[in-house]
Image 1: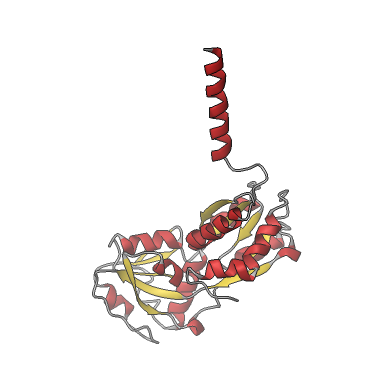
Image 2: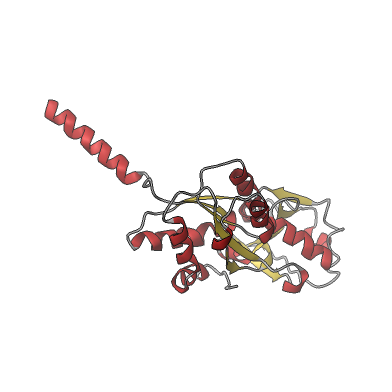
Length: 253
C-alpha cells in the first residue's frame, strides 16, 4: 500500500509538471486579434525545444492597463502604436527591443448567410444597410480596432449616421462574435478575424487611406526576468516566424 501511494503521488506530480507551464516560459500579453496566429507561432517555438510562451489575449487597452498595474508579464504585442507608446512613456518597455511585427486591414462583415451587399465609398449609406440592427464594433474609445473603425467611417462621412447605433464590444473578437451569432447585421473587424470565422463573410474592405496604418508593434516589458522573452520576440520578427503569422492573413510591415 505504501509503494502504491508513493507511486500515485509520483504520477500526480509528473502529470502536474507536464501540464503546467515551465517557470522560465515568457508570459505574453497580446491583442485579441492575434489569438490564432500567435498560438500557432507559440506551437512552432515549442517544437524547437523552447518553453511554450504563456499567452494572454484581450483588448490592447485592457492589456496595457494590466501591464501598467504591474501584472507579471514579459512581452507586450499591441494592435496599434498608441498603447505601446503609453507603456513607453511610463518606462515600462525596453525601447531597444521594440519592433513592428505585422500589418492588417479593416473590413465590413455580415453573417455568412446574410445577403447584405454594401460598397464602401465616400458618403455610403451604412445606416440604411443596418436596417433595424446595430453595427458591431470594438470600443471606439479605447480599443484599436474600434478607433480605426471610427476614423475610417468619419473619413468616409458615414460615422454620424451610425454613431448612435453601435453594438460596442470589449474587443474585436467580441465584435466578431456578435455578427457570427447573427446578433448584429454588420460589424467592423480586422480582415484576419473575418478569415478565422466561418460564420461571417467579408462584405467589403475599408480603403487603407481612410484610417491610420494598422501596425502591430511589440516590445519586451521592462520588468521581464524571462531569458526567453527577447528570443521569442526575435523569432516572431524573423522570416520563419513571420511565415507562420502571415498564414493567418497578416501582412508584413
